[in-house]
Image (cartoon, rainbow, N blue to C red; front, side, top):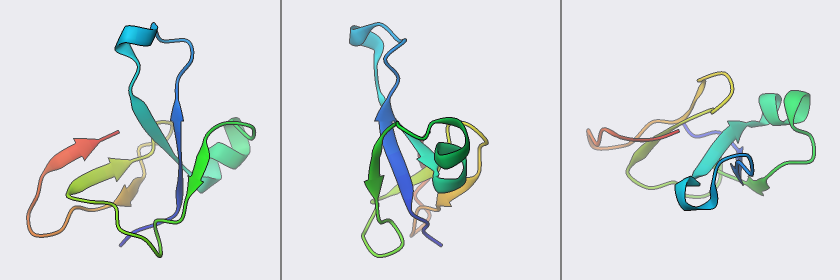
Length: 72
């Protein structure tokens, strides 16, 4: 299962602590309509990590082959 998402960097976090976060399409459209860049995860590869929405916690992508790294 892989869904589309948006990636973004939270500008309120000090620069040296910033990381790339992801949002599900629903939360991005509802809460942050001008934030992030679109990633067509339903058609592209994510990599060996679980991706969860930073806002609601919804699973966007489940890692394959038992990988358990998390990017949220």
